[in-house]
Length: 317
Image (cartoon, rainbow, N blue to C red; front, side):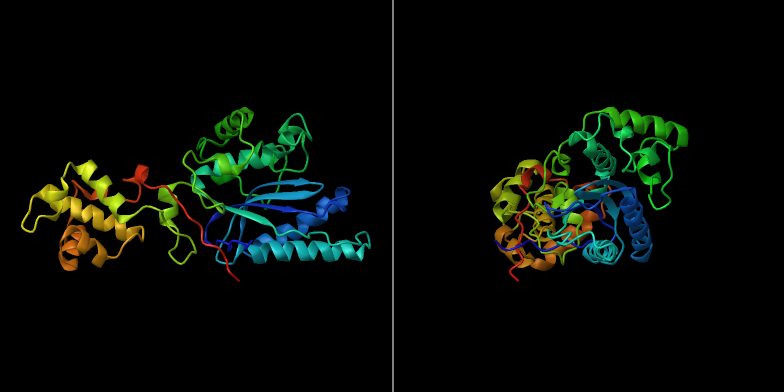
C-alpha cells in the first residue's frame, strides 16, 4: 500500500515516535541515555526546533516538538544517524538500530497540554512504572521543577495552567493525575479522518494549501442545504433572478465563501448553482466579510457540523 506523504507545516506541533528493531534496544545503560540526549540537544539547536516533552524507553523514543522551517524528517534522521554512529564505534550493534520509519502526527496546538501529559504517561501506560514521577527518563520531573533539562521548553505548557510559576506547577501536577488517553489520536472529539493529523475541521482549514490533503468530502449541494437551513432561505429565493432580499444575498455570499475556501467548488460553479455572476458573488462576500454584524459567519468553523473531514491523498511515488 502506498505511503502517505509527510505533512510539513512550519511552526507545527508534532508527536514523534521512533522504534528500534526487535533484536536490539536503543538504550542499554545510563551512558546511552546521556549520549543520546547530548546529540538531541545539539540537533534541536541546529534545526531550530523546540522540544516540549520527551520519554525514552529501551526500545522507543517519544517526542513532542515544535518545528521551524526545516522538515521534521531531516531532524529525526540526523539524530538517529549520529546516535547509530556512536553505537557502532562501541561495536555493540550488529543489526540496524532503526529499521522502521519514524511515526509523526501533526497536532493542533490547543492540545499541547494533553500531548505533554500523554508523553509523560507512556511509562505508566506501558506499566514500566507506577507513577510518572518515578520514571527517570522523561521530562515530567522537569515540569515539576525537580530536575533541569535546558533544551526542554516547559513554559508554553505551564502557562496554560497559570501565569504564576508556582501555581502552574501545582495545576500541572493535578492535571497529570487525571486519566489520559491511550493515543494522541483520541484528543479531538470530532477527529480528522486523515491519519497524519490530530485536529478538527477549523484546524484542517488553516493548514497551508500546498499540502496533499483534501479539505473536505462535502459537496456544493451539501453546502447549499446547510446555508439555507441556517439562514432560513428557500431554494426559490436563492436562485430567483431578481431577488435582492438581504437574507438571500447573504446566503449566496456564505455559500460562495465556504465552497471556495474549502476547495469544494470554483466561483464559476457556485455562480451556476445560485444563478448569479462571479463578480456579484465576490462583491457580496467581500462586503459581508467586513460587516460587523455578519463577519463572524465568514469563518472556517461556522458550518463545522456540516463537514465530514478529511479524505487523505496518497503518495504515489
